[in-house]
Image 1: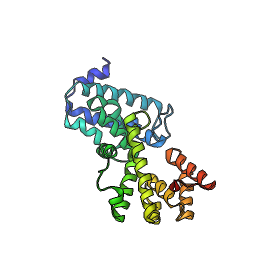
Image 2: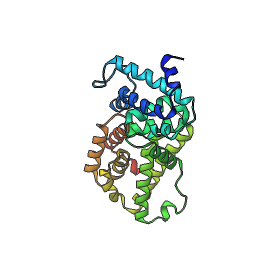
Image 3: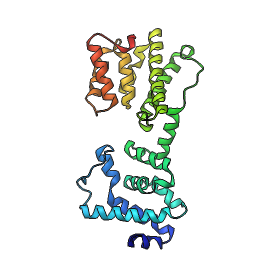
Image 4: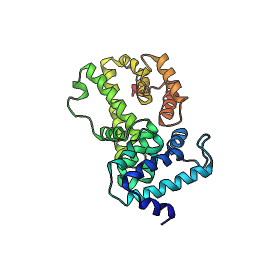
Length: 259
């Protein structure tokens, strides 16, 4: 046991969480991950202080965490995962993860997405819960079908909170939602109501703008193409790639909604 660990091991449980939070703020991991989009870098971003201070803060967080993990979970300890400061939440997820691995993972995703761990956990459940089988898409009213499009788009956007790249269950979930959106747009086309997707081209959610744009290419081509071009020029990722693919197919005379 290091001298730091011995010192903290003798402190009362109530004193440790505030100390942990103080050093977590000096460490600045929340700001690092938000700055890099989740990537871990060996470089200390400008403004977080000298390397020596960062290294000391990391040692202190580790020592305090060891003392906390040796005790029963307290409300003050659990509150670190909900602290308003992202540096504290990230440090809690990194150093106190064994308390609740699911909460730690959700805390990390929440900091990167700008939401709480509870919201991440709720969205994971929503994404993984299949929609009701009845009424069918064909039985729904036009308004209900539009609402279903919105819901499916939000669930597809929520895939960033599940491991759809490595976990087969989550990959199947992602594919099922994509298939659902294809079926929704197919039903809208049958009813001649694809133009009603146009308002979704202004959605704050890139996934929904992408899905609306591919549905509107035949009925509102100028705005649909402009939307896809903006998505393609945005941050690299699956939305950017999918927008580029849709544009490539459109330019050779093909449209996904025709299939």
